[in-house]
Length: 101
Image 1: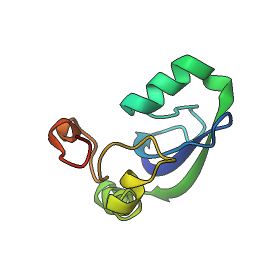
Image 2: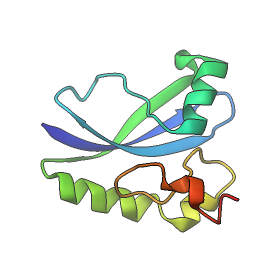
Image 3: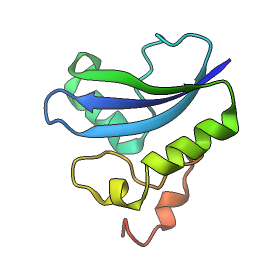
């Protein structure tokens, strides 16, 4: 099992999403599961997105730390990203995040 940090970019509007994934296939075509990212994929189609692997880890904890480093408050507040919350493990707690409201 490998743990990756990837960046998915929309080729239409240059919006970006950084995410984490565990996989046995580095070329599995996974683009991400963020709420706004999935809406954009539905709108534009998968072919309008590209994913690049930024980091590959053998250790899950190290990968979470890297995601937390990259998907920080500054990244989430940018206008050109689909990420809703600070990285580290994913989840739904962005719903209660005052920055989003």
